[in-house]
Length: 333
Length: 94
Ligand SMILES: [Fe+2]
Ligand SMILES: [Fe+2]
Image: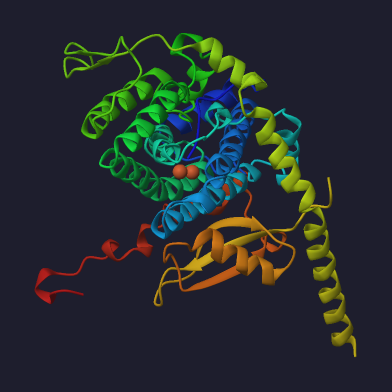
């Protein structure tokens, strides 16, 4: 996973008209921008913010599922979940290194996550109380992330686009294993099916929020579209996601908790699509601002991991220095 | 924050017969850990048979501001390409 519509990046930039026009012309020709190329400060800042948020989301995203690995009901499910969570860790690493090509250090980014300065996807501030949540996260949350990430494979910034290609190749398994898990539950006992329904009731709206605010309220979207960091608006992607997902819910024999959901044959230029009810944006902003159910736990867990790992990082560096010194000494003898 | 852990560039050979290709970077204290981390990070699904790790600080790159001076001169030298030379059809494929 797991990108989210960018939260609060400042694309302001101060370069000359000519410079900006030449840069825009490169973008318009679909040229990729590479790390040391001249670029407007606003472009660089937007990407640092977006890739950083994305990387943090992958890493924090390991927590809600990691918590179920030891309790998976079979070896097959355990192996799948373990592999998925490991993938998310890998995604975080690809993305951190893409951000680092823009001149920010890993340490700076980690510090910003731990201090609360950097955001991550709001979705991971919801708890995972049942096993069905492992299915729903794969299906809906990874599914929403895939919708967001596929267009990012064509992002104008080369290292981000390349990282996203790797990520997207790996995401498909995440979504499929989740959906398969839900099929098992829905073919199981009445209680198991109820557990699956309850899980969808809790994750549906937060998944829709993953696409970020409505286009009208998404202040920096326009510049990101112009720079081809973003290719589709938040609302367009959300709509695609809903249209793709509802038939999958129907197959499971489950419903989504939206009484206003209705097929609208006029939508999508006459191809048809679903109208949906109002999203609770107060809840979204509460969670983004740190007041979701799990925000404090998530940061606490990341801080603990960072602090507990400090002696390991220090020891590895000390060992590397010792080995290097020994080598120099042997060479001198 | 503690000291920064060095950055490494990772190159993977997808299979024998192909050259190593840059696939990303990572942080590690030394080359032993860098190779282990590269295996875990970049080859979880049979992406490679061989890995190189190179300290990022050992890489020297050409200056993008000099892209034109460096590379434009090669664009107008059509005589460096085989199609510049006319060989009669009777000669056959050459
Ligand atoms: Fe991911
Ligand atoms: Fe994923």
